[in-house]
Image 1: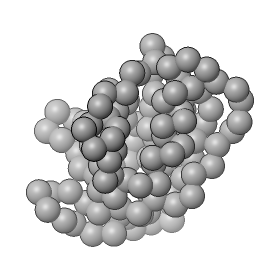
Image 2: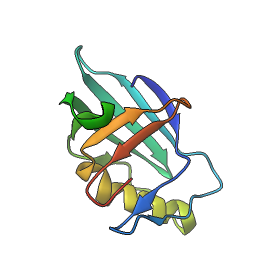
Image 3: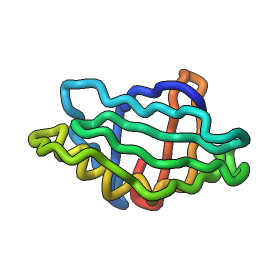
Length: 115
């Protein structure tokens, strides 16, 4: 999971409604955090969001189960689509519970009502 991943889609709610993406790239960056399956996650979405991600095992269909730590953020005022996306990430990142890399070099992260 190490490296940088560009956000190409975000879906919310039980019906997986598309969230409008801003014109600027939103990059998820995973860097090592002390060895094993622990990572530092940083996301630039208006402000810079940060957290820890621990891979806790393998589950169905090749997914890895994950646990995400507390979310921290810089606090500049951000409006428009980037602000909406930032608020969505602040409220939903902690609920993500599994991820997988896909055949087309993508990263998919899923929560109970988030993808």
